[in-house]
Length: 299
Image (cartoon, rainbow, N blue to C red; front, top):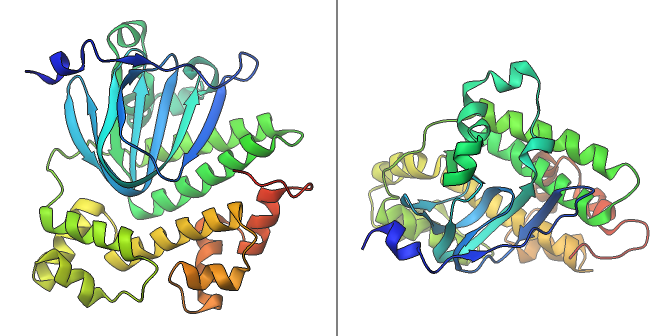
């Protein structure tokens, strides 16, 4: 049975979460579950923050990992399976209203491949695009996604204008960093290492431990990790820890020192510096921004 035949007859239709007045929404899924095949009445952009899963469409399936960006247009049926601690930011938007229309952006090949093929024909048959961002672009895109998520939740005066500006920045960054997707599946040893990091991130992990779990030699491990995950293993570990720290800052009243230790950092000064680089603000500023004036939690 082909992928198309397997999906046909088992597809749900997703209901848009945004309003007609502002057709845009952003959702942070801290623990994304398996998701049956579904079609959307909008354009969907997903940014994989940590964990892994198999993303499938009628055309086939591919394992996704941190740094992957997926754009699903029109009637393209898609879903997730074999989910392992998957965390992602999901943005739903009206492509006609929110994608930049300036000539210099639309002339960029990366923009065309990721976003502009949302033509009437593509909308009818469905369209799916994918790329994996290099480290620098991923760090910037992740920060933008967190800010967009905060603005959509808090809805402070001027948030719609700021969301449009941040989203334009995000789209251009993705377009500039575009690379054709790799069809090579993630190496089994690297998948084991990533799962180990995602499970034990709060512990005092060493690089030697991670390499041992992979079952590879040190040289093989470093070469394959960079090839499949695009980041150095200790940078990936740090990123997973920062993601969990951000969730705790957003959703709990725990002290910053407690959170620092809870996610695996043993130096509060280093944690603060790393958080500022990743999120564009200190942990204290991030919590204050997220909670807003009334102290209401974002999630």
